[in-house]
Image 1 (cartoon, rainbow, N blue to C red):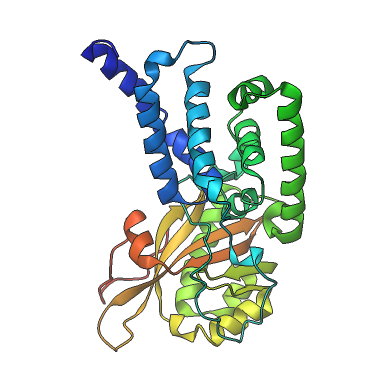
Image 2 (cartoon, rainbow, N blue to C red; image 1 turned 45 degrees about the horizontal axis):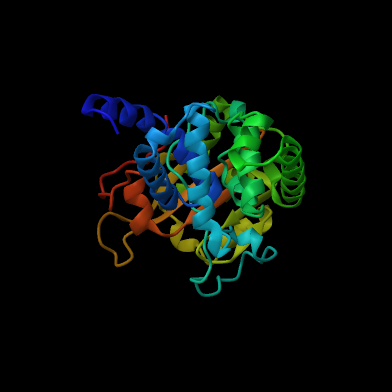
Length: 330
């Protein structure tokens, strides 16, 4: 592959694509861990094959062709990741969830993204959008991400897929139609988006109200059709009455929780810690809450219970001491 210096320059140039490739592969696969693995495999293949890059397309397009093939291989099993609302209708809030759905591959949260700018970037990494993408065939999924999120031209996408421009445009139209149907059926936030300042204030108020178990304040913050879902349970709720019934009933143990701010999928998120169940001091991990918004209301809360894996990924501590005050984003 040439001399060591040339290899170093090539490797450095390829490494510069890691961050954007991770976002692409995450949208394709619905799993941050799988996306990281896919990006690593992409860069290894690209580095090994850099001598075969002839410059007939941009280096970026060439790398994305490799990433697309890696993701297609990963999706070959046909198993689709989902959120609870993809599996069944909403349930009553006052009833406990059924046993954990271990057989389901769940859409997972990804760390990072700037809540201040999410509204201006089309919110293309929101959980609801990533989940909707999973309903598309892999080629359509790649096409709509490349065109509508990453700004590739129809010609670039056609070249990447080895197809015609007409075929690429047809795939894009079908993908957009499917996404519009999914958004209209399930996504409260398909309406107005909220700017970063509004999100920040709402997140602060939500963290304080949730910790106090202040149902009246939560009523003020929630959209009338807000959703609450609880992967890995299939249970999810829609609407303020059922969310209140859940928090005042089966989830009453969340009273007195502490919420530590983080960011997931371009939205404010919180590591939720419940009071020690045995009456001991401090607080123990309970869930990663991802909070989404529509206008000046909270439109969705997704509480992921896999804290052993997610809290380290999001840089959250494995416990909180008794002396911690209420922690909300500033």
